[in-house]
Image (cartoon, rainbow, N blue to C red; front, side):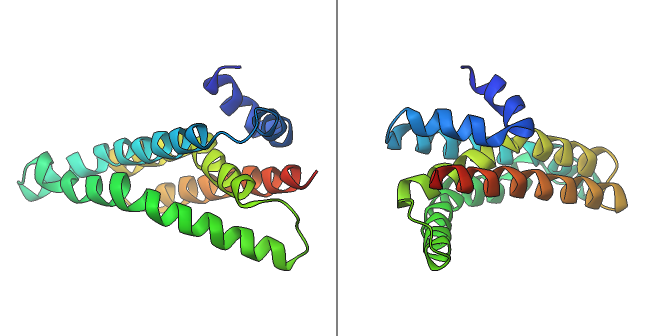
Length: 158
């Protein structure tokens, strides 16, 4: 199934999508592609706000996004692997028997599947600015992310 269809379906039935992903076998290349795709989308979602900042301060867009590029494209993937390992150890403390790959897949898939909300949050922050609307969309993204992550982890245990 196409990734875009999986993203839409993950918002309604995240366990079914995770079961399909797990049935494909251990594919570290696929998990890394999910992580890099979500990091790229996170980076691009910051552009409207960075353009707003550049306009308000009189700087250039390149000056404002170069730090985001380093942080979101190069550092965040490394942190995500560490967070996935930590997530695995935490779930193990609760008696989970899934492996490290399933924790990575669940985390990386959750980041990618919740990316439409991240893009929306970036547009709200860029066009409306920081404030209650941005906070509401950020909370919505967090709820979507946690919904998909928790259900994906539960499915990985099946």
